[in-house]
Image 1 (cartoon, rainbow, N blue to C red):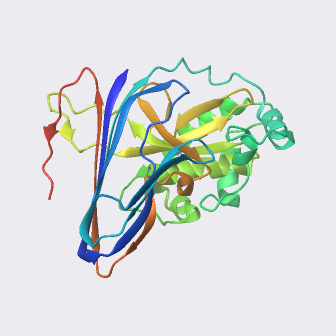
Image 2 (image 1 turned 135 degrees about the vertical axis):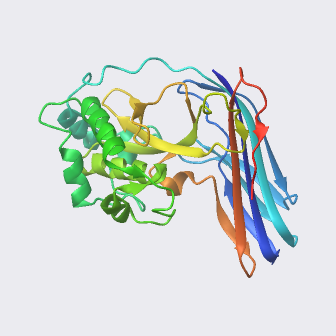
Amino acid sequence: MIYTLRHLTTYRYRRPARFARCAIRLAPSEGEGQTVLSRALAISPEPATRASRRDFFGAEVTSVTVATPHSEFRVEAVSRVAVERGPLPEPESGPAWESVRDRAVAGRGLTPNDPVHFVFPSQRVPLVSAVTDYARESFWPGRSAYGGAFALMARIRSDFRFDSKATTVATPLAEAFALRAGVCQDFTHIMIAGLRGLGLPAAYVSGYLRTIPPPGRPRLRGADASHAWVAVWCGERWIGLDPTNGIGVRDDHIVVARGRDYGDVSPLDGIVTASGAQRLKVEVDVIPEDEGVPAVAAWA
């Protein structure tokens, strides 16, 4: 499947900002079934400095500074990416989770893809005993790591309520778990915490998910959203699992970045020198090649 991706972020400031510095992670990644065909990044106002690099885990990061007063800051990323992944393994296949746990902590590799980076607590994913106990119910002795992780994903999908008003980007993991509600970021952090609590490596993956409009209705421009899910080390390979939707990752998921938690993969982060309120608007399009240009959505 070939997709066109468009991600537009707009900040509007009540009073002009005099300076801004930010790091941008919006370019789809290469590998693991993805091929980037083209990409472009437009920034307004024109940055005073602009430089690109790879972060430790391989995501492309564009760092910019804006040194002129501005009341609006816009970042638009447009990419074309081909996605073709192989079939997922049978849920109960692969080595036992205890074996995967022991191999993860005994490993000596320190490359970005090695599981040891993803087995310990991180800033946004502390170990919470209640979350570990919740995850443990899916991992009886001798069960495969993949089988247990797949079952945990399905339970989160069943037990938790998607509610965009229940949490914010700063809501602690333990609070979202107690609420049994939140968004994809919360469900992903909770699943990672449960797996790491058992000693199993799990990474946070950011990207996009293809959505299908209701029957008879056009795809609306800007009405998609960024997404997050879990990559679980199952002893032989990383496997993507999406607890928000209760599905394994195939060709409908497009990877942008991977890290220990959301803090490693935030699409935009940085600082701005300004006073007064600001407004943020994000528009995302995930357009399969066989669909036409989406209709314009009505925005307030």
